[in-house]
Length: 308
Image (tube, rainbow, N blue to C red; front, side):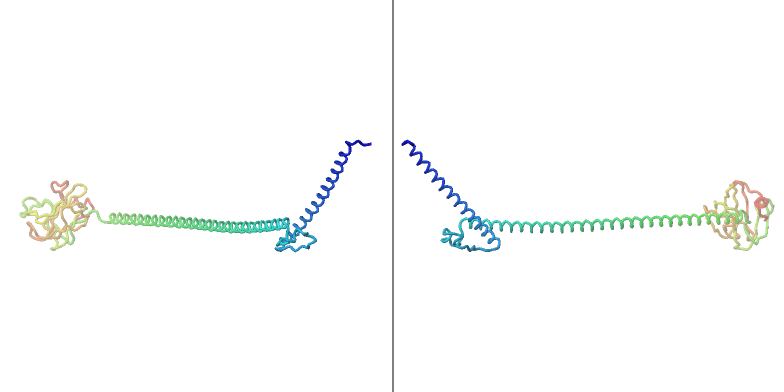
């Protein structure tokens, strides 16, 4: 039989059981409320995603708590709707970001393509410039070779012309007489060492008589060392030759050379005249070896290939 002390313990147990039952019932009610709230929030989110701004629910679904709200949404529904709107905004932002990224990628691709085109154009221009430079260098080299060939041909032509001129000159010199008589159309009127009353001493040369004005010529090549009036010899010219021999031409009417002139065999030095001590037109011709005393001109002329 229970004691008096056990009665309060039993009451406490009963109270505990009643409180636990109430908690369980309250928990079940809270769970149902949460589930209903989640369902309403999901419905609101779907409505928000579909673009609906007002969610119409039956009074049985929303309960008395929604009867006084201006939008007909509970705080949980409003929160879900806000979350849905935020998600939609974030989705829109992400879509905009994707569009921006796509545009940036397209712009970058276009810029890369333009850069590649510019690089290709620059490379093509560089190649063209290089080809032009090579072509210009080749043209210059060809022009230089052509100019060198022309200069060489011109030099060879000049050398050939000089050689021909020298050959002609040598041939002319070879063909030209080395010794000639002092005049033409003459007759001898006095010989070497001939005595006579017209001379102070015996005759010192040969007298070649010819008409007035007949050319008097140098018998060999040499240099004129005198062209002057010489007393009884009249107008006199003297020519010194390569071996030192001097030939003299006197009684001429005029001079055709001056001192210092170079003459060849046959060069005219004056003309037949009657200047000085003479009785008729003629040229008095003397040969002076080394410029000294005169010798007989006849054998000297014959020794040099001519016969007076």
